[in-house]
Amino acid sequence: MPHLLAPSILAADFANLQRDVELVNASAAHWFHLDVMDGVFVPNISFGMPVIQAIAKHAKKPLDVHLMIVDPDRYIQTFADLGADVLTVHAEACPHLHRTLGAIRDAGMKAGVALNPHTPVETLRDVAGDLDLVCLMSVNPGFGGQSFIDRTFAKTTALRTLLEEEGAKEALIEIDGGVGMGNARALVDAGANVLVAGSSVFRSEDPMAAALNLVNA
Ligand code: DX5
Ligand code: ZN
Image 1: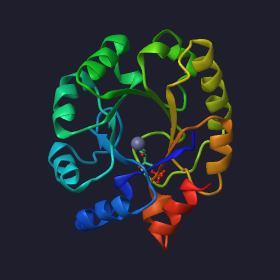
Image 2: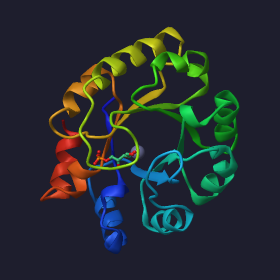
Image 3: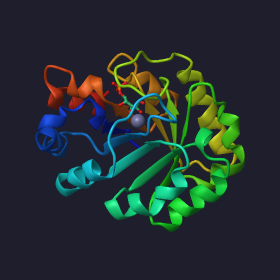
């Protein structure tokens, strides 16, 4: 399966949000990646429901919502109602991850789990059959524009092996943080299926061309 590209709206121009949403609609990218931060789980606050509602009104591609918040269970139905297609929670924020993943699927969304750079992939072995996507954080979550952590290559390979061992090879591996033309191909070769790209798309001279290059990487 060819890999997917999910531009992160965190790097868009919030004063021209509709323009940047239309840019993704018109580009070669596949999904919208929406980063929700609460200032508690991560040391930054991004945007929440009203902004996602505004984006959803114009977005013509699936919404991949990445929750960097504590106690995400409280909002699962809310994000389903907003039109999220993929809802990703952090393993570190979920004491009852198995139950949370079930609730996301029951609400009609694809269930994703994100792992911080320090969290081993082995933590997912017993829920491998209960998830649709694993988001490997290749930076410490909270901010766009950080440098890629090289250890992510080995982690991607190890996760691919784990998913196969557990009969979960349909699950997608997403890489989030510091992704660009310098590492995109190698990540896909290591087993990644979805590349999130914030700065490398929106902060480039030509975001349309940047998206196309990352799709063809
Ligand atoms: C970081 C977010 C990322 C971020 C990626 O906490 O989860 O999605 O927007 O931005 P870049 O691609 O600039 O590293
Ligand atoms: Zn993200």
